[in-house]
Image (cartoon, one colour):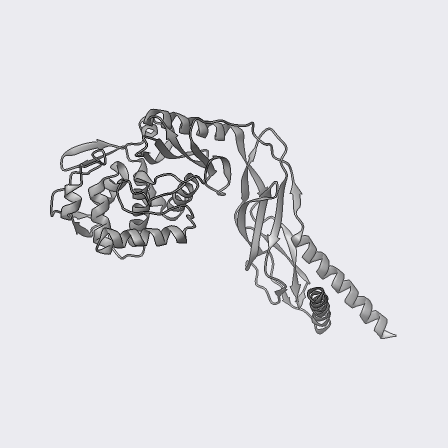
Length: 403
């Protein structure tokens, strides 16, 4: 007479487990945001990105290959920032200006120089300011040779770093603006590099918004025209390619919301600045931040093998937000991704997976989730029930694979 009782208990446990697992896999439709009206730009290539989520709000020919131009200096700066963070060098470390860096300080690269003296020893902190603020070739070459022994060795490191960052369209051939046929990048790759620098090196990133730089008693202005216009931006770079295409990468933050815009293929620096500013204004006007889940708000319950109880609530330790368009219906969804089943015991606050936020089925953001309570090891009966469910699931998968 006891057997039906146990069978019934196992069935209830199985249903509860299966329900918890299904709940974690289902896309939950959230209140709809709204899509903005179409936008047109004179730029040949452009991209607008929300820095917090990495979501692309607008793009045009974002993967078309372009010349890196002075954007190679951003990669040089990032690698120097990394070397400083790893304490391989210090701001007070001095490098000697090599002959070739001094000779090239005012060559075909439109006078991009910090006017170093031949064979002079210059601090890394000063070289970085010359590199970032005025895109100085002598600073870039001095840093490259100081860190790697030669420009070629440093360029090899740059390309390795580009691959590690997922810059699929990017190849560097030098550390200056000098054009080379094999050099290439895309505005999407440049946006990824910019976001990486901002996220990994927030203190050093402040160099990009400094308005001027004085070295060797010569004062030079930052080449970013939007900085001079005080357009609520804080960097990052402007350039002109061999084809006379002008481009600009700009970051702006308003009310805690940071957008990054890159434009390329404009006829002048003034047009590039104007298009970048227009795209920023459109982005701030067309999108608003939407809180999908509040901090520590239960998002779902996940099954816990051998636990009492048999599931655990999960939440994010930070508010989960996305930028949502204002005027047209969108489908916003969420799902939990984790490796299961989770196994007891579990501590409160343990990271167990990620919540993914999707807009119209496109992944927009991922945030880690943690357990909201501790889960102890269950009774022998509960663990036996979980084992039966797991064995049943394995058998079903094996039969499916066999077909």
